[in-house]
Image (cartoon, rainbow, N blue to C red; front, side, top):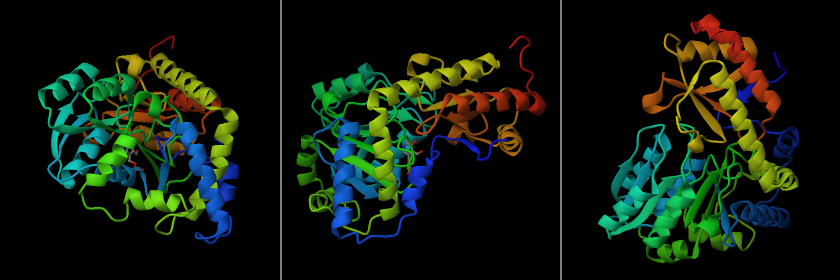
Length: 370
Ligand SMILES: Cc1ncc(COP(=O)(O)O)c(C=O)c1O
């Protein structure tokens, strides 16, 4: 057993000790000079990770708040929207748009499959009234990364808005906001950023700000224009989660030291170790086409005769390994191993060792020779 649990869920992710220490700092005046310097610093740093020249707004909310902000700040009730969905979070993005009165057409895929740019292109060509496309970059429920750059290309060609859920990708998987022409990009502090839950980040392109001027969906707490105006004064419209900002400051410094490319390479290498490891145990990945397998979370089919709940309980109780179950229609069918943010090859070796020890006891015989 390790001293601390091996938290291998796709968020909240483990938080480094120096970030935890920062989170415990005494409060400051959120309208004072120290906070102004802090928010200015982290907002500038975030732009480097987003690869954007535009402002990155920092909302005190979880990722879902960021998705809601993306929708309500760019659209009006009745606007036609194409929601590309490959899993639970794609469905959620569509549901948010519907809740606020958008006229949503869903482009659904089997859970475990990637979206295809040509389908998006066809859907847009067939419906010139579609104003915006919603897409999940990394579908956490299935462990799949969509070919976002290709999708963005066809959305740009069709000249529509592209709103991206990058909650479990940004900061861990390559994403080029300005280079790919992404209009709104949302992520959350508790994922690749190694920070506790409590902050959502959202960028808006010039096109998105233009849409914002005429967007009539109701909004108050997540009003992007208010957040932008106050950000320029070193503040937020409402009381922010100050402690999480303290943590973010330290985490972004760590990430800057490691460097974006090294971070991406580490995630890709670790994900490969996870996939090779689970396959070596005789298990099957949900994502059959590994070109789309996520670098931040791996979904593994639970073998016949094994109960996901029993497996997870034994892993946690006997080995201090915490993995996630399936969501929605994949509940009871898969388990998911998170490997984003603070994660090392050692963590993965421990996780694979725990699986090898527990699987035979919960009903799965690891094939001989593995
Ligand atoms: C892809 C994706 N989108 C949205 C969310 C929702 O974020 P939150 O739970 O922080 O509201 C998550 C969280 O797991 C996610 O992985």
